Length: 216
Image (spheres, rainbow, N blue to C red):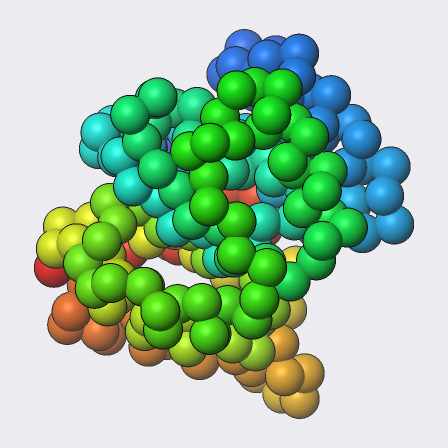
């Protein structure tokens, strides 16, 4: 028993990855390729990807919205978990990164289920129909997190789930004197969600912090 979350050292993390994460050879290949990129640190952790796929199955999600696709690891995990009768929309602005994603989606055979929108997410989201999605994930530019949050609440069905990444921002959210715009944006949204009567939420210490939000 423990009255606080354990520190995850490298040995314990290795145990988690070995015994608690199901990752296909293709998924591992994508993760390895991404780790070799200059911006590879933007990729979610494998245990987070596994958790997200578990959530997709748990709620029987069939429609998924992702804001910030990067090289496509989270999209690959979630769409596979949702099954062949599901559909997803991905928002990103980088053709370079999403070209990598699409290679792996094609190899997995899920590319026809994913509608990739290469444009500013704020514009793409405005074009989508309200109450259309069972599940959503925000992992894009932090200054726009509040905009994405509000749009996701509009676009999610009642009872649907929203996952928000990087809510710890490497621990920077605890700095009350910060002037960093990204940190301030995440601090603002975390506080807003904690008292938002439109949702129920839980803050998880997985990866760089993952906020789970249920639309009421």
